[in-house]
Length: 322
Image 1 (tube, rainbow, N blue to C red):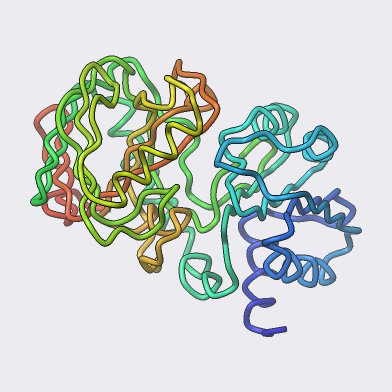
Image 2 (cartoon, rainbow, N blue to C red):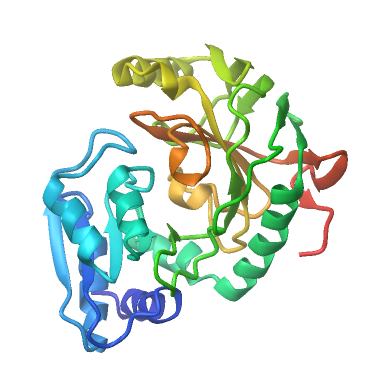
């Protein structure tokens, strides 16, 4: 096993999760993610803890609930690492565990090669960036997003507050987020978003895009999906989910991590500094009102972001001091 991976995993447990002697550490994984979960299990030997690994069958889509025994273990743990192929972030299992005080790192689809990129960032710098942008979001009302590829959206975030930023530091009871981390995010008013969204980097059910996928939206809901083969794949995914609420806007997310590499896996791609993504489906777990079977994300490059007519990002470059 790569010793550098173990060193990084040890730092995650110590710095990001604040793991202490005697705490209950549970590692939730599936049969497709055992290589990554084994790295963390090995790293846990450096702490005075008795870690538990629970291996389940892979979920079919992001946001699908795990077996009940997994939900119970998450809720009873002090620290839970969710190393699964499909993210468990937007599930009631994660939400209930957070409410019970469990500190959680959700690492959907994190492969060992990602340890040396996004997981190896200076998370105190990420925290500073995320805190600054989260405050702007919490105080904001009207949002406009454009891109050179044709994205042109307007929507409202008035009255919505950002949850604890996804900054990678989950060392207090009830804190949770992704690893790799680095995101400020908020739930837009679900019926307020109108315009065109042109995805050109990654879509979470599909992976890396090799062609643009265009989403036309009205009153916060996808009305039309246009493009080639990958657009058809997204339509097929939504047909299989069979949930009208999966078409509804859930999230505006803003990348904060300078070490991430675009790899086709949303857990890392969406954290890249200077990108924006929009989530659809489930958002009641972070301040929204839409309940859905799933949550998936759509990532765009070189965005321009205005909040209450103030330019925050222009063509992928921050115009505020971070």
